[in-house]
Image (cartoon, rainbow, N blue to C red; front, side):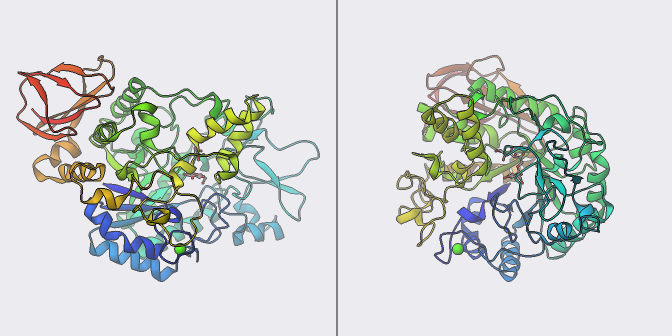
Length: 545
Ligand code: TEU
Ligand code: CA
């Protein structure tokens, strides 16, 4: 199983308030104890941090805020000693506008590096296309010192790289191989669906009053991304037997086998079906909340789609999402039992489970009392979108607080010491005020803690007796029509039933047969009468049938 670290917020070893690589090394035993095999690090390359490191200014280095290349090499080696592998983030849809390539493109737009980007002649009063960037506003900005404009589908400080140019692709493959040569286990591949643009560029029907359209409208028209992804796989990952997991939103119907099937572009890709549920073209303020039934349907839909094809990577949160327990559990019901239920339900799905830092402790969304407390550029844009739509500042803040990427980015809660033991300095982002009750130190030696529950889930997945079934077994939904009950069989040489009562009211179920063994239970007991079980509030069971 894999664990995502957001370096800036994981552990600060030198009191500057910013998490760093030596800090990660100090915590490797913690991760090893949890049972982690693969660690994905969000970007720690040199970066102006316009988008928290997803704007890279040098692909061959480590940002001094996070440490040195020696630290990184030590991390890879120390992880390996503990049988763990490091994945880095591969951010190659765009680089930073402070990358040397972009600076050279500004100096000579017609030269080699001008062709690394998408440049168009500037026309007064008219943009080359009417696409809206993911972080708001048009995707076109003036190329400094020239009469041209460049494309950025994310932030202005994240110019898109021109994948149509073979020289650019060579540079990327060279960089990937350079890291793999260092002993890196592989990559998580950022925003990859954006690398192929629909050519020639054109306008699409606007979807908001700003006259712009979502980038996805353009992406839907693209064909041929496979040629780039297949080439990248063959030139890099394949040669090193490296692990790759793609951040793929909206692949086209029928494309899944190309992505994660036999000899697919990637080893795996994330399942975002639940994460994107309820999204609205209009913005966060118009998004629909997700109910337990919706969550169940999202999971099963994705499972069914991938069943004969490959392994999805399953998550309940990441650095771009609110905390899973705050999103997928009805607000007033967020408690240790429901957190464990959610943990078991997603962890036992077919695929590769990923845990995001702090998820194993049940970290929750934080509180924002003013927009000034928010750092995330995506939240700041959505706040404005909500205000423009007529929401009051209080309403807009509430919308953003529920969705903000900063919910996941607050410092890791290690202990009840000041600043949750994350730093002895001033943290770059405030800690969640609930750290005195939710922290690692309080949970590590408590057999009833969420941390211990995750440990048991991981041990179960690795237990040779059940591994075949949990890793490779098919998934078959059970009691599908029962409301607020999420249950499924995992079948191979054994049959397991995972069953969760996704509500505060008790609920009874009749098993098809008596079970042989209880593999995991988030309560001390099972209220049972023969094959009929009365599930407690948010009770989850993993049974061997
Ligand atoms: O995210 C890609 C992506 O599609 C985002 O727009 C995501 O939907 C958004 O952040 C939600 O608010 C990746 C990274 O995970 C993200 O952190 C980066 O900001 C983005 O790429 C640009 O590199
Ligand atoms: Ca530091």
